[in-house]
Image (cartoon, rainbow, N blue to C red):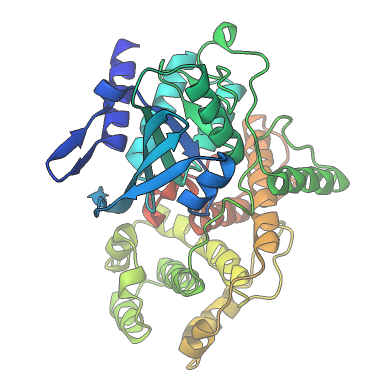
Length: 401
């Protein structure tokens, strides 16, 4: 446990350590409280002034952006004053590195000692983080400064890493650790859009005589989601169609020419590139990748290149996808691709997540599967990528349930 806590301290030091004009501020000296914020919208100084009436917020000039593990992150530093109390405020957004969120998730799991449903819900929430806000007082923490944290955390619906190395809710009530150490009143604030969507999914499943998991967490709210662009989604769908076609009938030279003609080279993932070079791919790998048509179909639907997303009992029409891929006007069609309304896509994302659990649960219990598990898995994988679940690239997507 000591090693885990030490790792998290180092992690948070990286989060808020700032070097500017030979000036270095480190976590060990300043004892921060860190807010993990999941909403997509940027946190602004004007917003903080609204949340904390009478506050003065001044941004410290300078480019504090950093690149870590291929992710460019923006750091902003502010001087915050509320009455006589002064604080340093650090905001990191636009590309939170995966390893940093995984570090806190690992801490939560180890601190809880077992991966129970409660801890799983917190980890799911932490992994939706888009902004990390660190608050450091000029003096020691007191009731007044903690009340400031409560105001900010409540407004941003944040999960809080407190100065005593516990994870708390917006009201600084302990949520992490073994059950006996948790505050029974602690709760995570979720957006109404996500809660309502989960309810609708369960109602739909009930109408289908399918039992969803009790206590399943929300997936993502309208206010939190950051979709990939329509062009990026359409290009990824075409690459998946090429991968699936190559899995069924390998032809590296044709694939290479097709990728070049459609300007898809940058959209091909490293693992896909290696597979598409194979004239005789492994039979098991090829069989598995023929199912990429289903992931392709879900993405085409999300940008309006397919009209409907039917209930996943049957496979999609792969021939229709190949026809689109070879259509002389496919570039023009992709250029016109447009994301469906946020609520429509997220309804499909949420339901697919529940269906993936139902399919997995049926397999584990050797029960008849009421859906096509491979269709659901591919849709789930595609949607996780689409909504930037865990902020992972295609090869690293983790379609957990």
